[in-house]
Image (cartoon, rainbow, N blue to C red; front, side):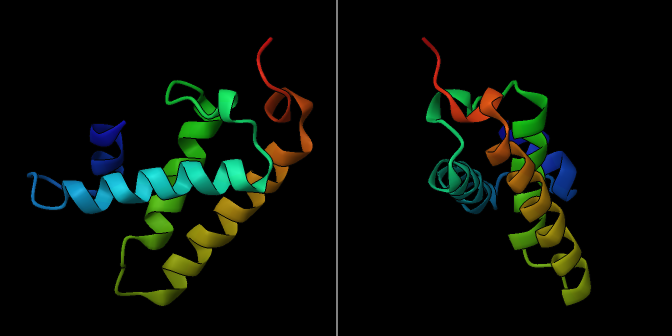
Length: 93
């Protein structure tokens, strides 16, 4: 997941790995806090991965605040859809 997020953020090198890992963890925690079941927050799920990517883009620190706002709106919309789906709100049995 780390390398995929770094690629999405256009980051090379390892200097920012700790910050990016913190953002990934924060995105996962936010999804769970919002109602996505913890069993569904998996790195290989395409919608979860996209939500984490957009969250990281929204919070990474772009110089253009409008760009960050657009990513935040996209994340909020995707999170809303995930929390409305029983596929993502009911745990694995």
